[in-house]
Length: 137
Image (cartoon, rainbow, N blue to C red):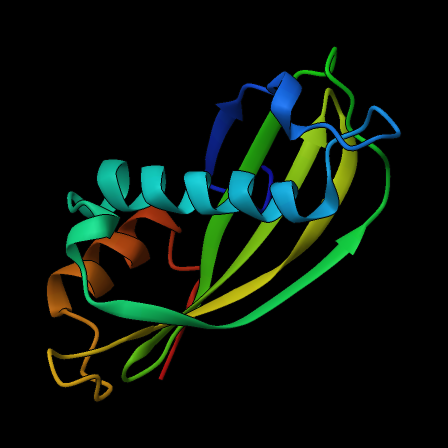
């Protein structure tokens, strides 16, 4: 079984390409953001844009270019749930080749911008979705 529990297809658009006719490196993080948005909707049952929070860390390693003709899949999973943070891993793939991989840390914030607890319902849904392969703080 793969280490990722959630995968989603992303369409490569002409506007995603740089002058070398490959997807611009910054656009790959937009693909990851779209996968995160879909994960929140499908697994947590909430719209990411309706949550309060901020990304505090993004790490990405690029392995292969993505072109307009490629079929892109983003694999996404949470690996750690802290008091106020969610850490996730991702892979961006073309067919079965890894084009990029990395980690994102998302911190929950209240209306004043102060870190707040990750909702218990989210913890339960993430643990259930990740088959208990998530580290809990």
